[in-house]
Image (cartoon, rainbow over all chains, first blue to last red; front, side):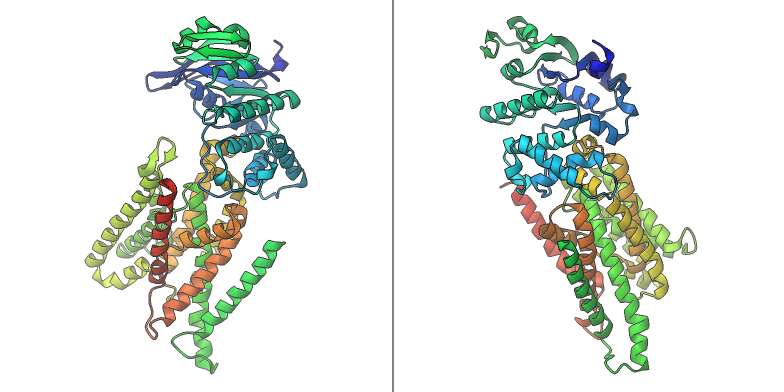
Length: 257
Length: 319
């Protein structure tokens, strides 16, 4: 893999809380335009990995590079142009409209005291149309359903126009129909905009169906990294989750326990 | 454009209240003789201006605190910061330190800042602030400071009147010479908070969310806390503790114009001015020719309002 094809490089990162190792010696690189998925049990370090990549925790060791440059060396606004993040939990105690929340995605491009420009409005509208949320624009963010809210948060990430989008279990509180909707949307964003998607998932069959490559974590260590089809098999699932699984075809898995 | 029209209407209301504040009071000034002019110019005008400044400053501080603490119930009074400032003022008087470190204002600011630091320490769980603990911390600090001030007053009975003034806010002693410093600090504070309005909006959606939008969350919070607490310190030093303005005004503004701080701040300035002018006029005319402390008026309106908000918050949490 050539250096210019690498959008994100994670190199030997570890994070300890006192003596406890949350993640240890994790390394991998993401190619521009790929669809990556991270799986692992609860407590395997998935969210910590995401927080490391997004500069939300101080690493004990290692370095995370975006476009070959350490994330520590970016100004916060610059980094926000390179990567957008959709978090699992979104708490809204204050009443913003869906439109206002999506518009916040334009902040990295706006100077202090600068008003929202025509271009910003245009980008917001396009992002909301793409995520099928334009009809929700005047609704209060507090009154949206879980699926609607996640699509709004993805629309906000889209307006950041970043080449890399990271998502922390965005579908774990949604019903199956909405899980598919969100995954289809991400595939569309991946294919049409060329955005690199890096998503933490719990649902193995969705990971199998949508991702090109997969990263598996166990007890804070990276176990596998490679083509999804090669890695998701009976043996590996048994090893990772301690469950008995059957792979039916390229899209389907049955978990027997 | 629509906002500009509203600014104009609100300015007219304020102008009307200013006229009312200048001409209505315990002394009849309708004759406009020399004595009346003196009262209007030297007694009522400074307190009316002080009401405008304090109202604007306290209301904007309230909205800033609510954003920083991501909690619609926080305001400098509830969190004990205003009381902290009044303790600073009382300590400066008792120890005779009025001539050191910018005098009473400087001490009020330092104590207010210390109070902010203490409540954040108490309410932090990891890097999050726990909502209920934050309010309880503020209320406990208020108790503690009330007790400390009571002790100071008993030990220094000769200064009791002066200290009481700081615990129950009043505009009645305002002099022209006080207005400049309040004006300068309120202006600087409001400008800084307005500059960071968009960042504050992002912070309202959560720290991690704001960080992912490129906001330097820690730095923004520190700057806003510093400047709003500076405003509080100066306001308390000059007019005493006036509670609930920062709670009521932004709350009503939020219902009317939504949660965007870029609109909340200008509307809170107008709203705070109107609220404070009304409270000051009421404090003068309710039991004329005597006068009530304006802090007691705002508290009489504000406490039931706070209880109402708590009741609503409860319903939201446990539907």
